Length: 238
Image (cartoon, rainbow, N blue to C red; front, side, top):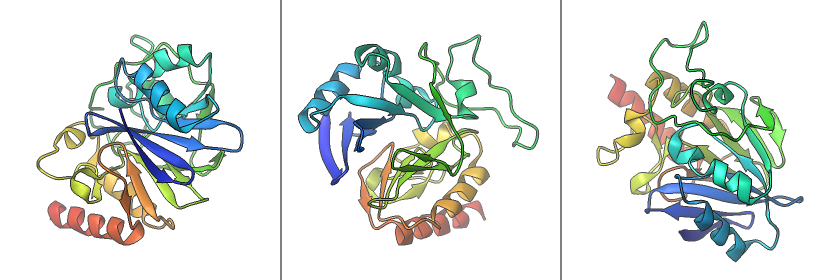
């Protein structure tokens, strides 16, 4: 697992050059944003030990796709029941079937939820809502890739942990569902592209300094790059 420094507060852990999770330093221990693929818990723990003297205290999930919750159960066991936080809407997709609820709410686009949703045995301990502060991270509702997708904005240093609301494969910021042709996977797994684009417009209002997405390298620059990504996505919709 490759380890890169993101800022004074965080590191990026990357598997296969494409699948990312992030270790964020807080005043009370460390928060892991997403857990990566299945069977990668040992790699995450070893990587964390290289950069952190304290154990991971919290697991924070952007959404319930398998490449973001894949190692949740193994990590929860190894870390001896850390806090596990996920969006209240997205939490319906976290359990394994048949407890998993893929139904759509009135007012949501009535499109099939896409992507791998293997579920987990680990139950969430915290259910997050748009706008609240979880540690140092501001919760930002970014539905589109999934109905309850959340992004997290670190107000200390301007880092946006975007999950799959954005994609940075190829070194550019892309709105999910409007990414580069050579990385179709996130687009194929996106539930509703117009909603994803609207979420990106909302993110562009934040004082972003860098984008740390679920797929691709960390991109410095923030707002201007995101606005350009939105313009490209809007052009492709026409």
